[in-house]
Image (cartoon, rainbow, N blue to C red; front, side, top):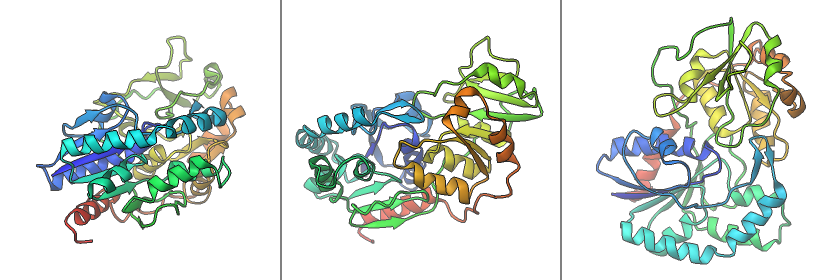
Length: 354
């Protein structure tokens, strides 16, 4: 069985959703071949998968232009999506040829609009997996009659079935939708991957976008806290430790040993904190249309505490850190594995059972 997989290069959240599902499909159908269409770094993709895939790294969408992980560039984003859509018909033709050459039996997308028209043209199933899509995102920024939205709608409406984990936006553009349980990476290894220097530890991680600037020296006054920060400079305060992620260590591996994760609201990091039970001190992200959905989960369901972008930049984190670890809310109980559910649904659709 040959499976073509389209993964957005916008941050790491789309890869975080897709990778566990591909792992499950590989376990259930170990003879399957995977063609992964994704512009993310090869090492990042392979680090999240436990098996080899064929990788084609040209972009499959444009997503949203990020100034930093917590600040979007709306003007550049709109210009980018308009420019990308000008050639979408030619891009779809290229994808059809690629899928035909690969002899694809199935297409899965999170959440490139190229995938579904190409799959439909070849008469093979086109399955979506996502908590957001670019039509719904740009609907918040463009007029309803905008040609860009109409073109995205035409592409997404050719999806045979969209699978949506918790924390998803309301994506009514897809004709067929099915809710599934949470999908998240799980920790590997049981040993603490850092030395304890202070009573409490905060892991600071902002995913695949540019880390927003903040006053690192201001963290020095929080004597009870140790901060694990990727790529921290040599002149960082004594309570700041540099940590490096790679094939042998990912953020989710560190979370069980951290008291708090300092992060932006995004599916990948929220799902991993949910899985590991790690409270969050989160930074507002008001420009991104997905933010209101995730904010509801953070404020109503998760042990977490928010801070403004101004407080984050100044290093005024203590209230959010202490608020997160002292919160009485607890993560909802996870009763099923969304990756297993998604894999079973996808394979059933391929076999014509659903």
